Image 1 (cartoon, helix red, strand yellow):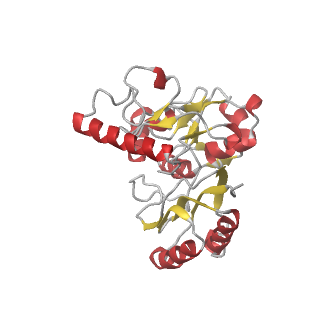
Image 2 (cartoon, rainbow, N blue to C red; image 1 turned 90 degrees about the vertical axis):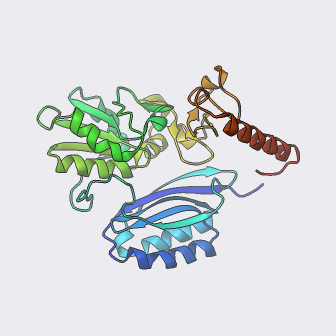
Image 3 (cartoon, helix red, strand yellow; image 1 turned 45 degrees about the vertical axis):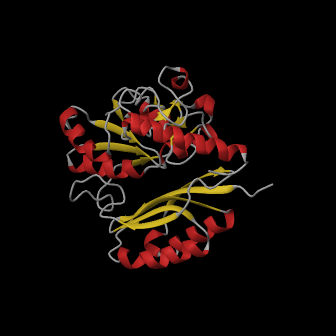
Length: 300
């Protein structure tokens, strides 16, 4: 039986003035260990999702944490029977999660961290406004009960959404969540600088909540979108039932796959009306090649 592939989602905010110099050492070590996926380095810290064997993931995490500034690195693990990524990328960025507001720094000011085991009690408080900081296509397949969906297409839209819809004097308690915790740290830092006094966010994000909280005690509804071949995960971080539409990149639920407009590998109800004939033909040819590869027992 093939060894399970470990998928590690990691991040840490820390001042890294020498982040450009760190790239080559990190890239070389990842290559030695046959690590795949993407890592982002910026002056504010590190972020990414990578995959590899148990031994290689342990080794690269130890390598990163050997830098005292990154010793408290957060990471969540899940498992697959194959690599979710084809190659390795280590990129230099202005921000490890792009908010686009100068001066927002979780290393300087941030909200209150809430452990997964304490999250239900917090969001059950009627005075708390619960905000999902993820993008609309992520929210589409799952979120917490009674959460506000900003319907943003990118994280850059979040500051404007907050300024137009919330008031520090009226909304005194705000709780936020995201996939792995990183966007919440940046969002909570932004809201604190905007004058919101009581800002809370889920430590480790939805992934840590699904890992620790029992299904029968959970307030989570649906699946959690992830940026790899699994598309969505459920409690215990098991692979979900959503699939990715190649036409638009939107996750598609089993119910949506029964609707008119769904064609495997080509279109879904979210994009069928907008697809050009040329793109539809290209996607159908791609699906044909995938089918041939499957018949030959080959990976595509």
